[in-house]
Structures are given as C-alpha cells and as structure tokens.
Length: 263
Ligand SMILES: [Zn+2]
Ligand SMILES: [Zn+2]
Image 1 (cartoon, rainbow, N blue to C red):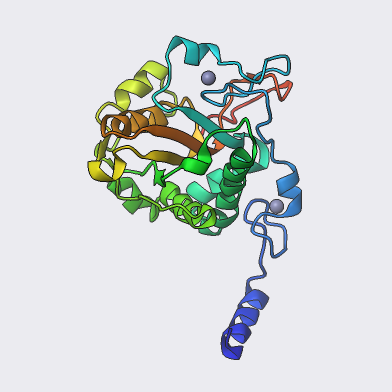
Image 2: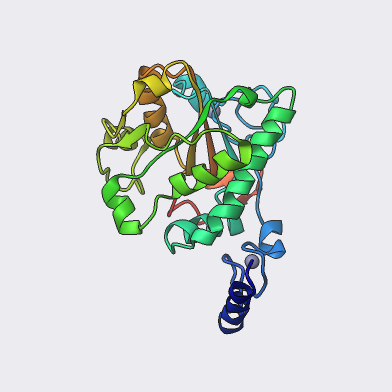
C-alpha cells in the first residue's frame, strides 16, 4: 500500500473510527467477537434433507415430517445458524441497512460450512460441486436496494471455495410480492413462474450450490431448484446464512417473539 493511501486511511479512521457493523461497538472487526459469540449456530441433529434443526433425541439421519410429506426439489439444504440474535441482526443490517462490509464475514461463514461438509465423511458431497448459483433478486428490487445480497455472498464464497460463480444462470422473471406473512401455499403460488434459467448448457449435468441469505419456508429455494432441475441440473444444494425457526424451537428451549417476521 502506498504511504499516501495508508495516511488517507488513517485519517479516515480518525474521523470515522471503525465499528462492529452489527452492534456498533468500536473495533476493527466487521463483526466483533461478542456478537459472534451470540450466534446461535445450527447443530446436529437436523433434518437430513432440509436442514431443519430437530430436538436432541432425533437420530442424525432423520427426515422431518414436512420433507416426508413433500420432498423438496433440492437434494439438501443447510444453514450456518438460526435466524435469531446477532446473526439475524447481521443479515438484516446487510440487507436492509446496506452494510455491504458484512458480505465478507458472512460469506466466510458460508465457506466454513462448505469446508465442514467436505471434511465430514458423512457430509454432503460438496467436494463434487461444479458451481455456486445465487438466488438472485428481481432487477427492479436490486435497483432499489443498490445491490443483490445473494450475488455479493456468492461471489465471495466462490473465491473462498474455488468454484465458479454462475450469477447469470438463474433469472428472476417476476417481481414477486414480499413473502412476509404468507402461508406456505400462498408462498408457492406467489413464486410460480418467478425464475427462469438463461443458460441450459451451463446447467446440464451440473451439481450446484444455491446461495440465499435466509431460509424461511424453503419455498424460494424450492422454486429456484425446480427450474434448475428442469434445465438439467443433476444435484442441487442450498446454503443460507440463517434458518428461520418456528416460534418454539427445541434447540433453543425458549419461545421466539417476532424474530422471524422480517425474514
Ligand atoms: Zn458487535
Ligand atoms: Zn426436512
């Protein structure tokens, strides 16, 4: 770094001291150690298919009732943590408050998740992935927000895990109404015809990791997986930062308030 640039950065830090993007406490870490400690990570046992956390007595190869009733179109979904506490704050601030610096630590968390699956002999076959596919926003929403959170996460993740980022493959055709407050059936209807695949040659026979910020009911990821599957994708996995959980959650042992509302 040139001396002038370094001096410029030091001056900038004097005027705007660096803070944790989640809690605002002073420090150089984008997410401070205290905020990280409060993450509620997803730990086994969870549903082998959709990754839904289950109560401690569940067997590690259990498939949840919802997945047994209607099998998702992706092979499996995983999330770094629950949509609670500071991890939820981080996702919300990244997305709604446009704190783009958060893309870096959040994609590092995704990369750790990928590495953990690869190094686990009973894990998902993520060593054979052929690409990372962001679950993109509709262009009008991206324009309004100024960026697409799934694309930012996917770009950084693809560099960290050394996989191509296929950000042009999936297209959001329909600007769907926000999913908040909709029932699972309404969510499915809302997403009908929402996605399209632009490049079937790029998808045929591939094994892809779909990236989104939050797994709420899985309907968005399912809709994306459906079109990719039709376009010839062989294996489809989903990975999100957080996973919204029902109001009572066995791994938390407490009732959640409105923590899922803004998912
Ligand atoms: Zn903090
Ligand atoms: Zn499940």
